[in-house]
Amino acid sequence: MTDAAVELRGLVKSFGKKAVLMGVDLAVPRGSVLGLLGANGAGKTTLLKCALGLIRPQAGEARLLGQNAWTLDAEAKQRIGYVPQVIGLYPWMRVRHLIDYTAAFYPNWNHELAARLVEQWAIPLDDRVGPLSVGQGQKLAILLALAHEPDLLLLDEPAASLDPLARRQFLQLLIELAEPGRRTVVFSTHITSDLEHVADRVAILKSGRVAWHGLLEDLKEQTHVNLEESFLEMHAGG
Image (cartoon, rainbow, N blue to C red; front, top):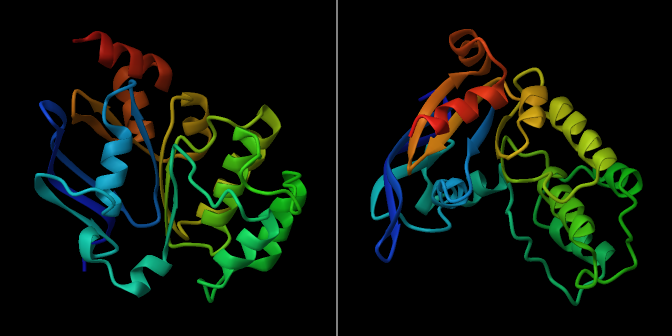
């Protein structure tokens, strides 16, 4: 059995004439926290969706927890959590009913964790989902992805719409959930300071390919600058 929770092998994905992923290879070791960096349009969202089996690549293979992402069995799906960049929830449902509905699918649902996040993030249980603000919707989506305590968590810009306090609480929660190597986390972000707080690995996506992947400390040692400056220098290189 491979020690990688996520394996991407030669992923190629285009939309019409626009090439987005051009032979992406990436292996994320089990128990690691990987931050995925890339400029707008670099293909981060497409990479995550291909990794999850939500869209099919034209070539290559994505494997999650040792299985092909396109044919994951029910047990594997129970072990995965996902927060998309664009939140699509059931707008007609009340928040408490959506939480209860989602919990029914997961035998390992952590009701105490869900209640803690509801209180900590002031999520309005009696409101309908549709009128929630962008930030409230993102908090709810994070709760739904975390409360069953998945072995593998994939997050697409999870803190983009959170206020500073909620973002700090979310990052602390990620640290709690991930340590010590208890589960694998992959998250894309534009906020390099967030990544430096929680990630032990980084992958930089540029022009449809992984331009760099490895331990965060190794990148710092090679470049002798902080992560933000390393990212900017890599993209300035053409």
